[in-house]
Image 1 (cartoon, rainbow, N blue to C red):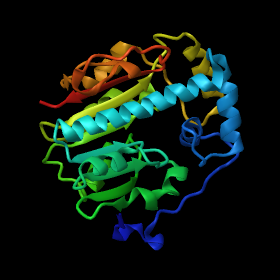
Image 2: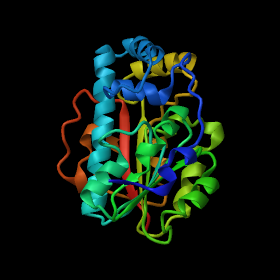
Image 3: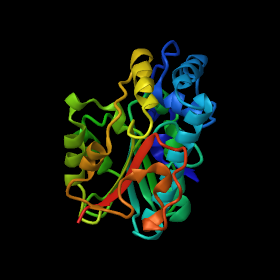
Length: 278
């Protein structure tokens, strides 16, 4: 693996991490078993998720299922759909199974742009900039609510005239309705070439009413808003796209290219889906 020129320390964005307030990216990292989190994040995660049947262990299983879906989806996009470009918005704290690691392992020539505005993710930008010699990887400090800025900067690494996978994993439930998340996604997809794909995972309370209690707690203690959306609202993100079988389903039921669905079991917090732009 080789660092691109923008991986130099003097070129990295400045950041300031507030360790007094729990942070969504760090809480997610904690639930995945990572180490890039603080006591305030761990305490908030333990307390908030106590409302779920199974408590923190259930939350950890849900988050792991969400991350496992990402792996299945990216591998399918590379191996079956032939995608070699990824725009990963809300990339989160990097680890061994994030988008650019999976994509370049499957196809070293893959080109990936990672986008996030979270200070703790900015601190890891040098990791996100690592790439194979055959491919490319870039990190953009950016906010989903400024899609034109993201697209303009992503065009420095990606050829948006060629099919690209737009990955929005565990992000859209942090965008309230007043910010028009459906319109933002439509704007981004409209800018991509035919044959591009959209990957979404979104928290829901459709299967577990305790998720509404969790959302209330999260909205009282976290800096980011948390919005649980029903299936119909998640499906709206795919308006105008061809859903890849099995469609918008519980996270454990999405298998590559519509293979026989796994039994979802107790994993109930996320809807996921993959759609193709015709």
